[in-house]
Image (tube, rainbow, N blue to C red; front, side, top):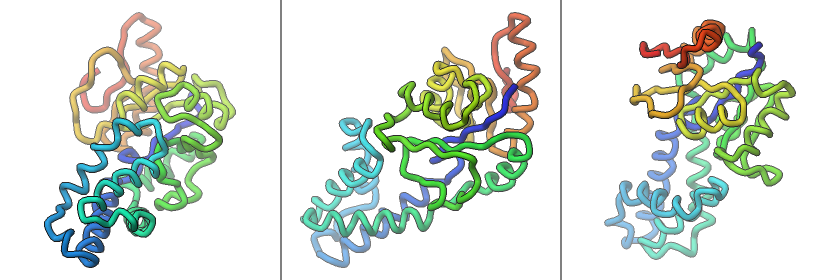
Amino acid sequence: MLTTVVFDADETLLDLRPAVTGGLIAVLDEMRRRTPAAAEVTLDELESDWGAVFGELAAAPVMEIRRAALARSLARAELGDHLDEFAALFFARRFALTRPFPDVPAALATLRDSYTLGFATNGNSRAERCGLVGEFAFEVYAHENGLPKKPALEFYAAVVSAAGVPAEQIVYVGDSWEHDVVAPRRAGLRSVWLNRAGLPRPLGHTPDAEVSTVADLSAALALFAEAEIRRHNGRSGGVNLLGAV
């Protein structure tokens, strides 16, 4: 019996992109205020600095990756000695702007009537700083107490431990195919792919359900029993509320 629904944070419950862009705009404005050397620096360049450092730092805490990206950005205008100030500016603006997607609050309220809700993320979007305070029975954050990031199996083991129920009673919901579909299933959890953009489903794995909004999740979970019957009858595939099964 499914008892627990655990959510990824960024781009699942939280509309992160506008917040990050707002943080970078604040950084760029301050760079230009401080030195004429920043006049030719662009927002596109600041945004690209994340990708430039991410590869080597993918396993590191998100805050460390962002600081490395900001260091690269500040070097463009010879402001590298002011990293701490600009990092504080970025994170203050980023968290001030981070909010749930519009479909999230009502959906969580509905789900809470039937399920225990959890929050588990690789990132630094702590629930209490992003408009989700008090929404979850438990929260799991990568890098706390040495916990590795998704898709490490240890991460999902920590989710199971925090939930206090067997893995098969937990469904993990998120936007990342590798982190929120493939890896949770490998760890024995069920999975729901939140596909807001209507992307084609990758080959090789099948989520237990696929939805386009969090508002569709209650209906998807109600259909899990049907999916179980299909599997017992030897037919593969989960429930896809976008039309293809």
